[in-house]
Amino acid sequence: IEDEYVQPYKVYDSSMQTAYIDKAEIAGELAEGIAKGELQVYYQPVVDVKTGQIASAEALIRWHHSEKGFLSPGFFIPALEESGHISELDDYVIHQVSDFLMDRYHAGKNVVPVSVNLSWMDFYDEKIMEDILDECKNNDLEEKLIRLEVTETSYAAMGESRNSILESFRTEGVKIMMDDFGTGYSSFGMLQQYNFDIMKIDMSFIRQIETNPKTKSMLRFLIDMAHEMGIYIVAEGVETEVQADFLKKSHCDYIQGYYYYRPIPQEEFRKLLDEM
Ligand code: C2E
Ligand code: CA
Ligand code: CA
Ligand code: CA
Image (spheres, rainbow, N blue to C red):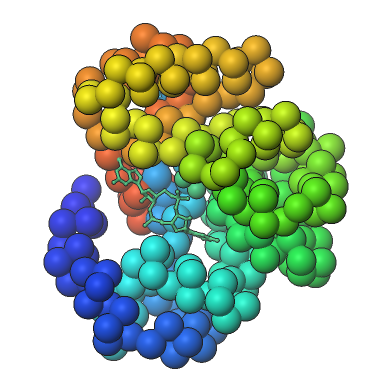
């Protein structure tokens, strides 16, 4: 497996990138980049703590720009949001993931649910939300293979009026995941107000498992509380054995992080699924 972050970090140190690449210019090149096949969906497998098997995956976009080199999503996603182009990207990712999963599903091959990231802006584009719902409904499983990740801050940015859209997805059997839990201003308010199925604990907490005893107490409490509410937990950004062991002992359901798998290209993910 290629160590995708070793080389790119050197090449695209984010401060350098913002100095040389104009955000608006990049956003304007999205359609062309998609047409030229420069944007690829990578998949990061998520492991079931109990079995050690791949339980699901997260779709993460990568842009290998023909002139500007490897662009980090941390850079171009905000650029696409500022310019209003983000929904084109999210729509593209959903279709790529859906095609990949459905081809395998209909061929009787192994599949796992794959979650895609949505921007709060997508919820203001009715056509795109309808399209996404159609793609989600594409399989006859009761629990749909495509899941939606919405960050805690996106929930806050959308406000309550948009939440009915997420509820209509849930009615169709689409699992909703709250991403980056714990990074917003009222995480507990979110828990009270909104219904979701899976909670992703932000990696900033995982980082502190080894150093901060308070973080460990918080995580244990958070996991128990979520379970009581019928919510499953994914720990994000797990990089060490110590972190993984602590999470296992604390009854965390799923682990995502470099300790198990990095985001990998579709071809590699295909091989992993075939070997399952
Ligand atoms: P995110 O949704 O929180 O995704 C998790 C990020 O953590 C990914 O960064 C992933 O590669 C990285 N990661 C996973 N495991 C580890 C680990 O063990 N250690 C460390 N240090 N990092 C880990 P990535 O791929 O650079 O994506 C950054 C953000 O860009 C994502 O954060 C997400 O908010 C956004 N993004 C990515 N793809 C899409 C997309 O298709 N649509 C939208 N709207 N946003 C996207
Ligand atoms: Ca399709
Ligand atoms: Ca995510
Ligand atoms: Ca996250």
